[in-house]
Length: 393
Ligand code: PLP
Image 1 (spheres, protein in one colour):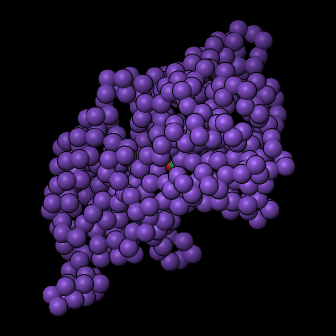
Image 2 (image 1 turned 30 degrees about the vertical axis):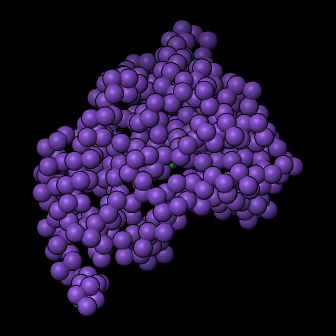
């Protein structure tokens, strides 16, 4: 059975060009980039090229790019560096819909005496900007907000917010893990001090990330060790993955430049409109305008997301649900709860996330297979039967 992969916000296929670029660095070119000999020096040159490609994708300069092991490490390093740089400040600000990489770190920090403000979102997933600005003070060390949400694709106005925050002397970090490679980003035009990205969301392998550190930003490393990454992240470089990320960044830039994302948006819209038309009591979670072109989160009322995923899986269709299995009970995701999505809809929410490898034929299969799945599950759902009874009066 062919796999129809619509789970690209979870992780992406490694591009074949990326694999080709990496292979020599897993076999013949195994030198240590820090060595004095040219066998290592050649590897260092290749890392330099990768760094320039990543910098170019986000409009940074090469020496502002620090390679890490993943988005989670970049997020954690950024926040810890910010609070260590301003030890007298005990207040940090984030949103209610961040990825666990940020959310759980902040919960830990709040137990250590930091006061954390979680800025709410409205039912479209948009940040309450007044609330955000009202809550900034001289005690605020860092504001950390995601550029685009991994579940709904809703985009926060990071450029605008960063300009507001820049003049207040507060460090501004953005988790751009879902945005880089999907949106054109010119970081030097913003007031962002720190930005996280990860390779595996843009067709590079897992286990490689980047922290962008704007020149002049106060910083202290999380991984203390050798002089690698100019002392900003110790540890011998993950050379093959860095080379792969460099190639992936080059490909992503080309794709964005020729507006390849518009095509992904057309496929996403076809999928979304067709499913909404064919399936009653279905709706999109979040603003349909200001969001990533590859993402749609659709709520099918009165069914369980997990049951939908299992039945889709029988047709080789891969997507994600809007629930997280925590402590044995199925909780709707914190993102959908923060948006006030009703329980009956949040439970039956499915996130579809496309990539440049998604084809129209695949979308057509999903459009054909999904309505009978929802109908079958609703036929078994007591909630659906009750809802239909009360609708009939
Ligand atoms: N931030 C966001 C918004 C994400 O979607 C993810 C991964 O899903 C991460 C951070 C964590 O990235 P990584 O898996 O590279 O640690």
